[in-house]
Image 1 (cartoon, rainbow, N blue to C red):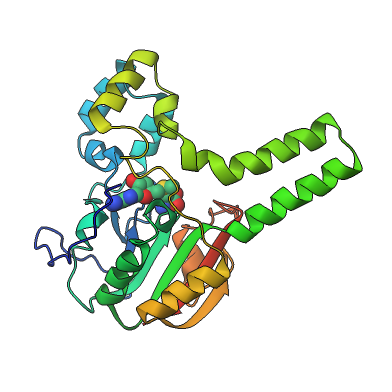
Image 2 (cartoon, rainbow, N blue to C red):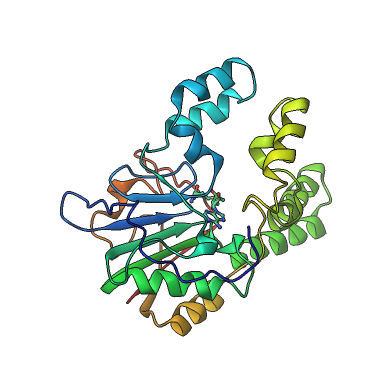
Length: 267
Ligand SMILES: C[S@@+](CC[C@H](N)C(=O)[O-])C[C@H]1O[C@@H](n2cnc3c(N)ncnc32)[C@H](O)[C@@H]1O
């Protein structure tokens, strides 16, 4: 993740804005491999680049350079997903989108950059357009930590200790990890090569650089100009047909990232 301020992006004619069947334009920023193919999906991960070259990806898998898990993730990536670093802003024109969504992305930016990213979201949204921000909920994580301490105070069992360690891990591991989760699963030589070529977790947008709860995120969205800010659940939204996109939930109703905060605002 770059640390400098995003320069305001000019609409990039390379990226044609896709529309949903009902005419809405929807954008998923920092999509990773979780995306709906009718949306405009954007990320700067290697997955996006590799997904355009299935033959190369297959060879890399056969050579063991790509783990099976990563290869399977690649197959989920829409071939027209946009490879773009958000440090350069959002490559769409003002007032062009009905929906901007990002999940577990904002916390990967330095605290002082988060308002700049949200300003970009505000800029590209149409009037009455909706932003939906999903991120790890600091309050839930701290409540879990506190509950684990209470449990330990009642009974210092192995299970209670494991629970406690997990609560600490969930709070801090992603702030200090050196390698991307996917890189860790690769063979040693591939790991070395990948770290050399791509840089460590701090350069690939994998590190948590700040954390938010409903109070601080609401304040941030308000400062940027969003109105009518509301906490949602994975299943609720003011975005019509939300659950049909299977972004926060799977088709069978499984929540993709429990312990998240779901918040929406209107431009
Ligand atoms: C934790 S993943 C979340 C992926 C997906 N949204 C999800 O919920 O599963 C964070 C994503 O943000 C992307 N990201 C981080 N910094 C970025 C940047 N500067 N530009 C574009 N994407 C970025 C990463 O590449 C990664 O795919």
